[in-house]
Image (cartoon, rainbow, N blue to C red; front, side):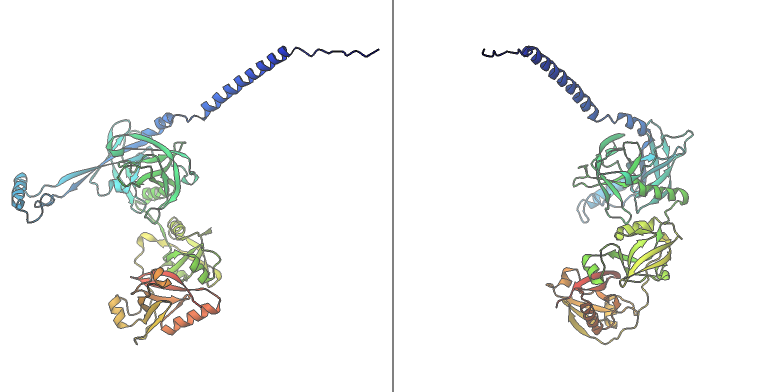
Length: 492
């Protein structure tokens, strides 16, 4: 018999397809619901609760200043104008014969309360020169304020108001924790329009504008005139900056604002509250950054550190620091550059004995220095130097025509009798010396970190540098009393 094929009937395809269809519809529904939930969670939350919480501590500041009246028609008509007598007569009539009247000038700014007993922080430029300062609170009401202390270096001022009840206040946060991209909000009184809130992000950190102690947070939160002195908050309601300046071609916000970092402000405020003034540490040296050329000329492994260009009378001189030393560590902290060193020294307690690690002629050495107070530091006084040979000599080297310093040149350059060195008479405009800023009238006092009092000594320093396999020679150059190091290449 022929075997018969047995047909096995598969389960109904219509039933399976229906189940699959229901499965996918259900899965898509669940995915859609989950997606909507995630979108809802990703949507930025309103800043209203945070603004409501911290806004009572933000204040508007109005200042008034008396400006003496001017005599004559200045600013109305030019001197010698045929209308000059007419306007003078008109002004005399308005002055009732009592002379020019003083007038009042008003200015607006912002600030914030940092304690329930009425301490208020703002910018120094908001209240500078003011005769009267009036604080207007968010909830209404006004109180006069007195200046506790100011610090023009960081543009911070501390005010005090007297209130019969505790005032709402905010606290400072750690500005070092603020990251580029973090949300921030700025509050204040922009353009005199009253209380206002703007939001943005931290655009950059550690910005330096013009001051020695600058440490600004850059933000795109709208900051305009009148916002000065107002707070920059993080999302925890902590003050991480004091709104101080904007970068703008037209005077309005273009999204580049700067707030002084709270970690700088808190130190200043603490000192103003305790002493009524700042008390910063003072090392007593002039310094400059170490460039690649200088590092090569000095045989340094890196450009980290701060190169001492001058040591006037003060703590550093007493401790034995010398011109040409490179400060690589201060009080246990590695020194990255001059800006970092200046800030660290300024933040160190006056009178503290600190360990300063230096690189001197290729060797590391630790020096103990007792810091003075910068605010009390007198002008730098150059140390006495050896007498120079008055005989006139000239020599052209490294693209410069040099002369030994004599009495005539000292008189022309306004230098003391104790000053020695080589005077730059002219510089070849095609030379590296000209490219690096050397000009006629500069005074070279050291070459290869050794004093030069004769032209042949410069030749010796060049020969020594070449023998040591160095490609450049380090010069200490003074211009108008200000020293700086310059590394010039040595041609074979």
